Picture (cartoon, rainbow, N blue to C red):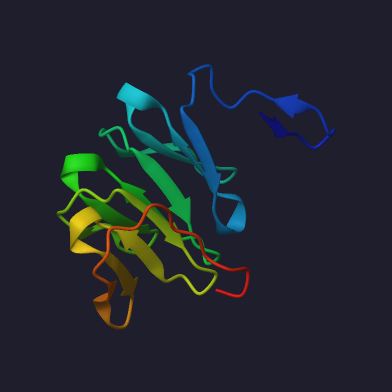
Length: 137
């Protein structure tokens, strides 16, 4: 639901979202399970981004979306370029820093960082249990 000009709640969808995350500029990303991944904003309304059901989603402060699509890999989405696959591997977990850098846990192959300027770099060979970023990125 969203607030209209008179500060009332407005229903955006009757579908049951499995996950929601927000991006820059009022973008709302919604995982509707078997209905796929959708983007909503007040200018364009609903737009389907993918028919695939993501395992998890994260947004960077600049509005970029990162999605783990299980065996289909780890993907990066922007308004300008759409989806670009970052890795064909099935990530066990990932998080996004305030800088927009992505940290991925790829099980027995270790912990990796992805940056837009450098791509992937392995940080650790051990199999991590959890990943988190600090508030300063």
